Amino acid sequence: MDNSIYKCSQHLIKSELVEGKRSPHMAKSSFVITVVVIFYCICSLVVPTKCYHHYPQPLEDVIASLFIFGDSLFDAGNNNYINTPGQANYYPYGETFFKYPSGRFCDGRIIPDFIAECAKLPLIPPYLYPGNYDFRYGVNFASSGSGALTETRQGFVIDLKTQLGYFKNVSNQLKQQMGYADAKTLLSRAVYVFSVGNNDYLFPFDTNTTILNSYTTKQYVGMVIGNITQVTQEIYNIGGRKFGFLNLAHLGCTPSGRVLEGGNSGACFEKFTPFVKLHNTQLSMILKELHTKLKGFRYSLVDFYSFSQERLNNPSKYGFKEAKEACCGSGPYRGYFSCGGRRGVKEYELCENVTDYVFFDSTHPTEKINMQFTREAWNGKPGFSGPYNLKALFQSN
Image 1 (cartoon, helix red, strand yellow):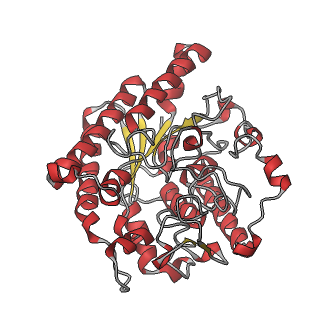
Image 2 (cartoon, rainbow, N blue to C red):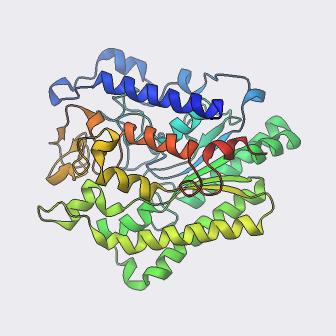
């Protein structure tokens, strides 16, 4: 086994065991935000500067920078700085690892945090984080609730094309700061990761929009994939060569999806399924096309669908006790998006031990799931992670 793979995998396994031993009892009775915590995260309740700017090694020793695009699976706090209800800057988000709400829709770390750890990078800061001017290690553009389509929750998110615009600003700043040649090298070695599409299919079902009445499933998915393709090609034209994508999980099997289905059977909401399956098929096809058409284009397509289904169907095999109900929320399966009591419903429940759960809130996975997923994506065999796993993607020239 490659020693660097072993080290990263072993480190994540060790972290997981430590979290499991800790068994945080996050009961309602312990919901106290102390003065120390408030002082510690005084800068708008996001990850403090010392975390984002403590670089573990010199830039020349870093394999590749990391640029992050997408939605709440990847958002490290950009939504803290826009006018939107889609924020996670309140208790109990962040309690497992950060001990305060970092802006991530999770009890702790999200997938890009673990990717950065495996790549020996610091935590990658959100683009809108105040005072963030050093982008040499990468930056996070992701926005909770966003999609590939501009119309998806328009006005309350940073859509994918706006995220692309932010990246163009960053690439220009890098050229000014580093010089054209060094910036070109950095951008070509960097890895660009995406979690996009979830909200494009969720949005029509959780709002009163009639957008799906105007398109067939194939047409609608085609628009989503078309926008993802366009953004990918533009990043390539700017200098990007290495791309990592998550396909979509079974959106109807989240706690909120089971609420949409109704009843007490615990069944998944299957109206999402045609969109998810077609999206995953078309994403795989378009990446193969780009790999053939664009010189030097390399990609990893990580099978989030199979990964999540395996844990939903066999939770105990992977160290979980509960795969249908969320740790935090209210209503059936704790599937109402009420975790923290800031979204209209003030009453909510919180589990005793978050490490027993697949889902932290009605839609988002726990840190434990994110850790397991990154471990497989980093070390993945062909079939799970496309032609490259994430480790190979980072190390490729």
